[in-house]
Figure 1: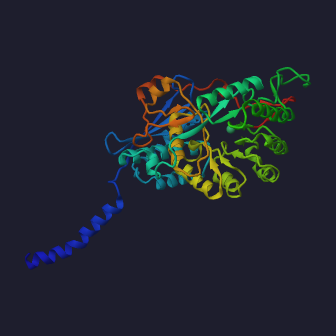
Figure 2 (figure 1 turned 90 degrees about the vertical axis):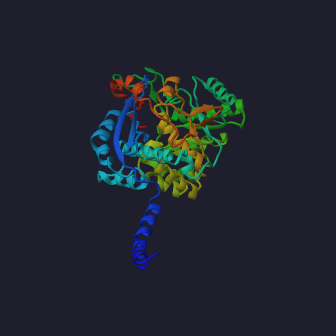
Length: 434
Ligand code: MG
């Protein structure tokens, strides 16, 4: 090498090293969010589903997220279309945490159901994209499998105690180890039949909730189930927040002899301080959180060891990123996850929960949700439920995609009457809050 060339190479060295260094720290090559598509669909079954498809600067590479919310579907579609989508376009698709925090504070005010659904959809889609780029399922990016499959709990119901027992048994025979037992649906066990009982001369004549009736009947249902079915099955029950706080304490004590896997939503979100009172008088395990949208709701309950299962819905708390953080908090304080599903939920959110469930050590259980064949056609890769366990395809990313032609064939239709299933009333016509 000639001297002049040698000196030139020395001068060039720091530049080459810097370029090498930056390519090393950068990880994969830059990838930007190119387009945000909102895909609303009823799936031909009256669902209120909103999916987000994030397209990137790499041709053909996209991610899918769930922003579904049965009560706010149209608002969410508009929010993404007009506010969030334009904010995301051009951003680095690989920077999930940064995009999450940036979107979280974008509107200045944080949290809220619509905002959280939108954030969750972005988050899921970005994890999906990262997994596809790495050619790994999301659970592998999160640390790999901490269990072989995801156990689910089934929903058994019935008109009377014998029918509930029969239905629990059917699920046990299918392989479920965990079954939620209700009697007569939402508020069932505490309902006085339409027109019956002493009511005001005019006014509400429908089925009316009575909390004393409820806390008398439900322990009897679980006594019956234990006598009929023994102790092998792990039983859950959902109170749907219908009780006044002291009645919640009383019910928690009364069901203790029947060794529930958990008692869910025994208090309303407004009364969660009462979990301290429940903890003092009973060892019945507590599940709470499907109505939570803010860490200020769940952090005290988990960190003070007042609940045993966190029930948040992944698409309602901020997606995979938020669910992982809650799971870490649960692990620290001895709480477990039981991410919420419900019949209104969609396969993308279910898979987001699945990837978290598979990879965390604080997993407790996952709520069951199953879909008709046409949904599997609409969303190829929808997880399969077999013998009480959920199985994803374990393909790259979330392992699911959406058939946009089919989605367009099933447009979103607003529920008639604005959907009022949450409205329950007492004998005098007053509202019983969920
Ligand atoms: Mg519930």
